[in-house]
Image 1: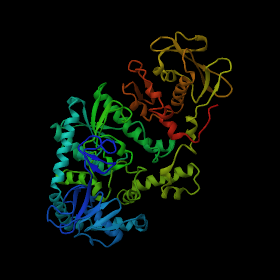
Image 2: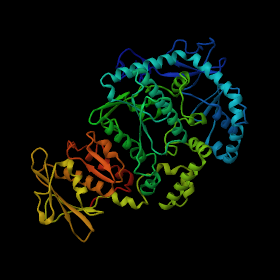
Image 3: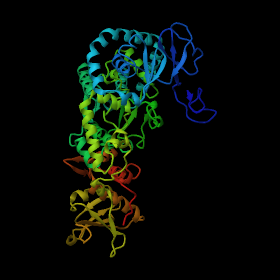
Image 4: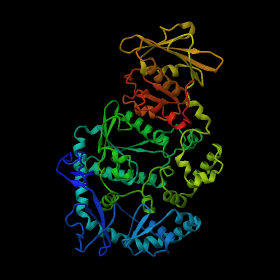
Length: 578
């Protein structure tokens, strides 16, 4: 066990010095052997950490992590900082934008990208493509062979440890409660292969979340994978009711702080597939999540079972490669000769949505070379959007990446929908009159299913009143009726009754009013409900009264800030309720 706080090894689950929980994986460092021209992975406390296990020569610390630079990326690197094939006979590795050529570091900055003539780069890469692979792929493979030989003990260790973890994690579940999340990226490729090996089950369910924004290379890889693994139960989750650019036009493009696309185009559709396949039962999903990928993921646990920590409430998630580095991923893929996404050969260090706001400048640069039409279409849209919301220097706003930091719905007409507008009723206590942007109908009443039993019979028919009864006591707690006034074309009066905290109940009521006005069918509510009671079909948000357990998770600040994801994406300034 290893204490990250004290940077020391200990046999205990809790560090005896600082009292913090320890982890099972001892941190690794990457060294360089000048004689073998290869990275060497060593544990930080290894007694022979300065000796190459292959040649016995002294090695030096190189980097925290590394990835191999394939011939395609090496040629592009040469066009940016040298001349074609200058590094072709050398061992080239990288970590982010720092390249190591025979162990010597060279930094590639955004200046190199901005100075490059894109058209010339595209043309030269195409002209030299065949020569590059024919003459220099064998040299690359020799370096990889040496890398695999030197680090074979590391490969054996991470394989065996991950396989044991998968087998232990799966013990509490039956075979028909297991699933692999398959994204087409290198991490999910490793996780898939390890899981099938560990469980000896090639027929396990694989779910691919097709956001419609995946790299073209990802779709090609997915097709190759399906052909190579015909026994795998392969399901594709896709939101066929929404078009990405149409949604961007309505609520704005996703940004780093407002990635609505993940919910609408990935988590939501995957939830639907899970609900259809598994019904009510809890499932275990094997994910390719790694601790070193981001600050947020570093806070995850290797197994997450609690509803506060998972995006889809009816699943627990297990991460076999949680402690792996990038270099471990490539050690496993190359060491086991596993097919992988071709995008990595071009220089992408991660794949997902090709236009993701979390992508760096290098990723955008690569897309301008390898996906020029898609790149141009996306940039044109961003510039048009920037002009629509009133940015004076739209192209600078886009090209400088400021669009990635966008927050709220400033400049968007749809931002008005998220505002809860109400007045206190002057004639009745504990009653509020909420403005609606469309007529009150049964779809609004359906939003009150989580509060209790809906009864039209108990209400005063003359004023079209509907009563909501407490599910346990059958006592009326809400009165709902259409309201007509000069302030708005549509309105509803909601009165709270027979409850201790009227304000708390009205707050949850206001969340449902917001959903009625603003719902963009983002599918988040489907993911929040672990009982599968919420569905969105044919643009209708529906709560199944027979399935609803009245837990009120869908109207809880804990799961949905403001009761609705759109509140986060379209809120402009902190507005006060009237």
